Image (cartoon, rainbow, N blue to C red; front, side, top):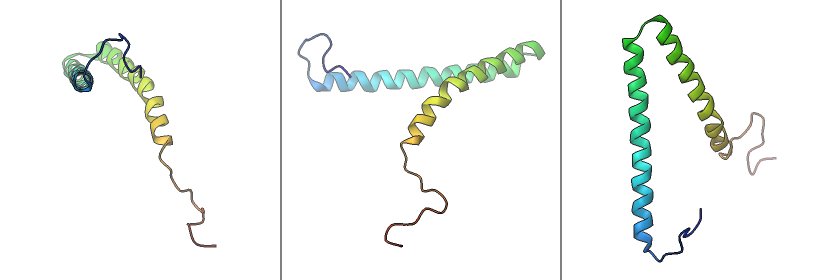
Length: 87
């Protein structure tokens, strides 16, 4: 993250409010978009439903790598791995 891209002095509170507001707007609009897709899926018929399914598959393929990268950061023991303190 760039500390201050404009070079203007601003209190940290302003940046915190902008970050929280931006995240909240992003979350709400994403949720609204998903709800609209569900509503359209329930209303439409054969061909339109198939098109909505393709949009959902494309969206999931965009999300999956991000989730995979985040979960790889979590240390997970493997089967047969010795536990700490035991020989």
